[in-house]
Image (cartoon, rainbow, N blue to C red; front, side, top):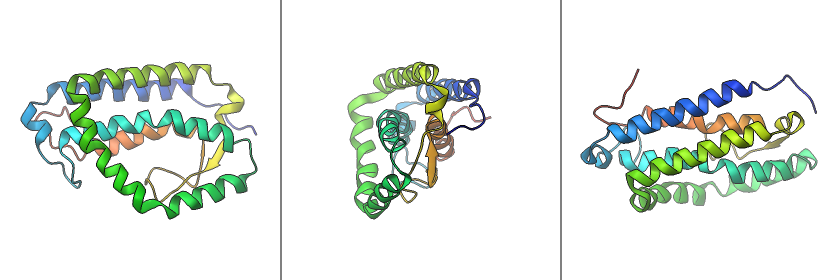
Length: 180
């Protein structure tokens, strides 16, 4: 499979913008801000920030799955996506509960460190990708996340967490969240 060249530079810029923004949000928030509820979710600001971080952490296992399913006939990932879509309710529960404990366990400082580490890993991994691998594709469970497309490529996966991040950023209710 071949297609247009992937703009790695644009992806690197997106990742770096998210990293800088995450630190501005996290470092600029008072403890009371992190405990305040968000707009449109049941999470606090601190929990939503953890969820935003987790969107990047998930890329590693998602890339591994795509490398397997991307080399199989499309029907294999289509069937896998159907099974995952059928399990949306348990996924939603886990997706909700994870940030409740994750934000508390990691805390402000370790969330910032974890964000830096995952972004650095994504930068290195993106630089190491072969062009042929960037177009590998598989079906995804579209009921799990509004930013999952029916079919996504490796290149799409590198862009996914920043789209997820930007969406949730608008739900934060931090008093000084550095909005443009």
